[in-house]
Length: 247
Length: 256
Image (tube, rainbow over all chains, first blue to last red; front, side):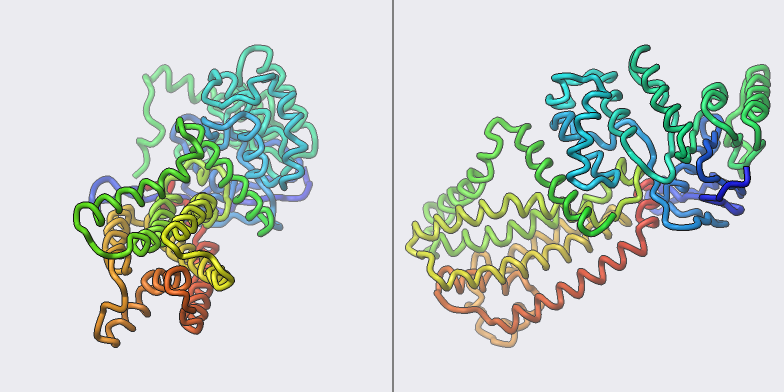
């Protein structure tokens, strides 16, 4: 557990201002002071229900936006990527062209991207459709292409947002296997999900996020149990929104 | 992202966008040639047939082609960051990529438009000679000018969406202020003429293109050099702004 710390959040806060109408804006505090570390090589699971601040946290960890309070300390310049299904695919371009663009967006140079294409094609099992425009794909085929492209990356920090449910049974198993390989390698992974079960399956350590605060942290099974107990209680009480308590 | 990766991705993405755009049209790449020809035809109809304008048709066309390069790039580039919400949400890439992407897309079409213009020039009796190599510095400086304006416009629109309307209006008034339909030399007061040429670089550029192609003269080289340096300095400054404001721009676009 004492391995090198890759990222560390210190009382990290995030709020955003959105425009409603004209000059009227509303400000909303999503993250209310998070403190945690991400160690090199670990797989950290973050669970929480809709609206608890998962996506904002991912955006900050990915370096897309800066925290509005507290700080996020990185030991060095780290390469990171948010694994998503299809980085803005262009519907009119072929799977090959889209995969090429995605690979380059993820930091490959042209040569390396071209070399990766065949393994992307093979992994996606799209066959001839790999050469056809993405608009002719079924939604399952699109996610196959997205997943195959995303899995080819090699970065310091891989962020995953509930993407395990991809395609049909066969491809889902294959995708999970590829994911597990990434996870068990030295790759540092942050896996975000609203399902405690999924986190339990993949992660070595977990956080439970509720209303912008960390409610529990530590052993995946324990955190997940607490999270599920909370969700069960919500079922009984008829539920209440995650953001209702915010002022 | 290294500068080399940036340029390489920019080039690929621009060519892919052209491919994608062309695949949506029945006449695909042919439109690159048809469009300038249609402009020529519509000008012929209005200025020769309806108005008997008396002005050399090629004079207007040359101005319009130079202006269209500018206006198309700046207008399409101004929306580029605001419209790239999806990608900005996913990666922390340099935000200058988006305006440059639009800039390249327009540039890659533009060389063909110029080729059509040169053919029309020959048609109206302005044949190419060695002097035409002086067009190259004009292309380069015009590219700098367009890049600077697009970077500013894209940043402005990503912060305040209303700027889009002002930019469209500015394009319209620039069209009338840049001497597309009239000759700069028609302005009799030299002080006013100089002021226009100084503060509207497009008017200067359009006149310089005409100097080479139509009048077989050399334009004011000193003026071009100053313009080039000013634009370059502006571009460097804008890159710095984009670099410093990268995450701020993302936050603005995501929560727009």
